[in-house]
Length: 385
Image (cartoon, rainbow, N blue to C red):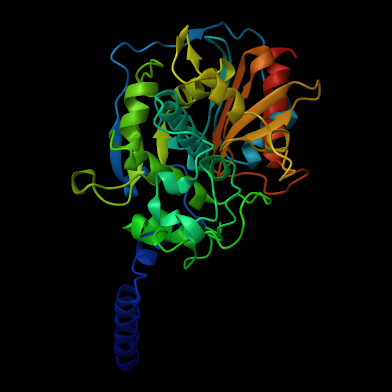
């Protein structure tokens, strides 16, 4: 009895101290992860999120469906999908859905978390503001976020933030419950979390993947006073692209309390609707002849950093998007997130490959996440390339 009482008091004290010290979010994080058998968040965590709805198009445009005929995975490919708990795999060319498979109880209506794949959506939203003349990527970030004026920003530009070249040491370790990204994903008040960070040294020379850069871009968009980030996407992209289902963006507080999008992750949509971003990228921001985003900006978005500046030699990344080449030398881009969420776009073939899942291969064979090339190879084989 005494032991039970000591344990109860100790547990209560631990929980109380965690909240007093500003780490109460950890308990919610544990409920989402370890208590469900995962080491960190997974694609089906929407039930734990405060959400802002991004409404489907009034005039939705379904993909054309082609008889798949004898298209099928090889035994080795099926084994890969089984090992890494794939949830969906889609291959599209132009407006045609060539191939589609689902696992884990998912189907074409299942809404799942994009994780970091939505960093590319933020870059597309910046492109909308560029198109409207409200943002210039060559401007210093201080022009939009005054706390980065002078020594606070050391000349950091919007473009450098887009390219992950800010040099701000946010950290990118989701597994560390006390780290920046865990706080950004699980706790409330992410603007307060972001505020203290400044540029410690002259930016631009080094590429380092950190979601804090995306959060700065989200803050920039909110500061334009043209609606929330979700409003921009709904009105200027999701609707015009003919999305069939509502999407949702995870917030740091309830929508009615003015929650802010966790813009580095937590965009929830169906795999078919995620594919629309790939088509938009393939067509340089044009959707069925309607130029949604300035084509010059879109060309920059998928241009390797090293091809745009002599300051940094990173050739695998553009504006919040991964870049590479097929074995045939054709450029491709990939919106990629934790657990291997992918929207791969190959303009030369007007090809989009979408993969979602619960696990990913953590090994790396190049600067790109290794699964990107694996998934792309499957899509190209099914396309006949």
